[in-house]
Amino acid sequence: MPRGLVREILLLLCLALLPALGQAVYFRDRISWRQPAKQDEITVSQARNLTGPVMWLDARPEEEFAAGHIPGAKLLNAEHWDNLLPQVLNAWTPDQKLIVYCSKQSCDASHEVARRLREEANLKNVFVLAGGWEAWQESAK
Amino acid sequence: MINSKLATWAVRLLRLVIGATFIYAGVVKALSPIRFTNDIHNYRLLPWSMAVALAFYLPWLEIVSGLAVLLDRFHRAAVAILALLTIIFIIASAVARIRGIDISCGCFGHLSNHLSFAWHLGLDTVLLALLFALWRSKHLRRAITV
Image 1 (cartoon, each protein chain N blue to C red):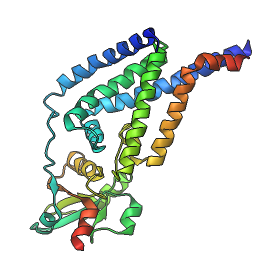
Image 2 (image 1 turned 90 degrees about the vertical axis):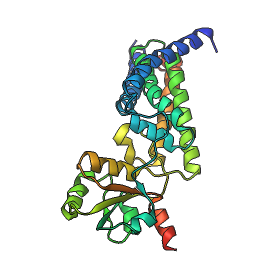
Image 3 (image 1 turned 90 degrees about the horizontal axis):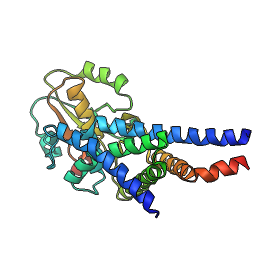
Image 4 (image 1 turned 60 degrees about the vertical axis):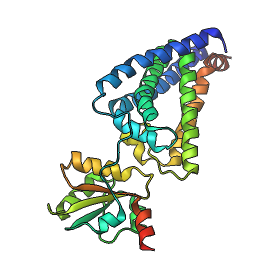
């Protein structure tokens, strides 16, 4: 590789480092360098033992919801958020806890929907089902 | 003469498309580093602290390289960096897919959440092809002007 090209690559790599460092300093109180525990997660058994009414929210795509879902669950995914959120809010009562799930442990959609419910709809008592639909089915076996 | 102008405009258009795409992708991610950290960590290839570091660094690398392509400064170095990033992303996505991990790459913010794995792969392959064309832009100019 020509030396000039290597020098230019190093220069660009260093140039990008400056704003990145600035941003890291700016965000130092907002993001932890140690992995945070997912405090909003709830296991299937914990969810089953919850006292009081619960509303289940399915954050998966519509086709997966149609193929099977937790009894009584309502569809609320990012794809049709604007259409689905009013339906969910109409059906929700303030005493209900909300539990969001997606397909399995590695999916992120449930955390995203839970975050938006807290931030955009200003709801509290929003949980994420650890292991999602996969864990629910496992527990039913 | 006309062909020469056409070649120059073709390369300019290529630079505009690639530069704007990576600047956009970088800005979207730089605006939400926490979300991008989660996206990187979701691949389950890197520890959390490394995901945080990359979430701060990669967006700016995309922005700086995108600007370099757009402004035609150090453009071969920028194209090399962007091509390498794209290749790494394709490999990481493929590995995650093989391991059965359901990921949101976060490459283009909320816009990319609804794209399937095939779409991501297709888009990245197109980007890689465009980067290759830009890398060979002198030859491209020559091919059009001949």
